[in-house]
Length: 194
Image (tube, rainbow, N blue to C red):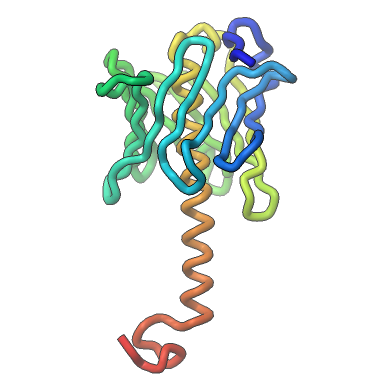
């Protein structure tokens, strides 16, 4: 199924839903209509492909201390978008010079707000979990934002970030629990070994 353009769907009913896998596939749908699809090349890998009515891009997480997510047009070497992580927000810079911000909607809220310059809201993204598993997400796009030609790319790179951040948080929690069970190096539980 080919993705429909945002102008042809109800942008108030957008939902990220997992599809067949492994490897993981996420689909942004308005009702039964596909709008964006993201499929990972391999389970546990960082390379993914995003497809919308306006284009197809490869997405990849790069960097360790200063992580970034890059988006490239399929087969191209140059980035068309880069999401760079910061403490208070995450910047999405497009090759055409435009810039967007992805930030938490609030301190205790798992939701994210995507804004353009001067804080104009482009999308509100709310991940939904079932236990520790990311089960999907609700997306609300204001009517004026559906006319943005870069909307599909922005939502794809934003959701890619949410999915990888969710997985990293779960892995971090499992590591902490394991360390507590086995004992940290140098502690009595580990026999005092370093």
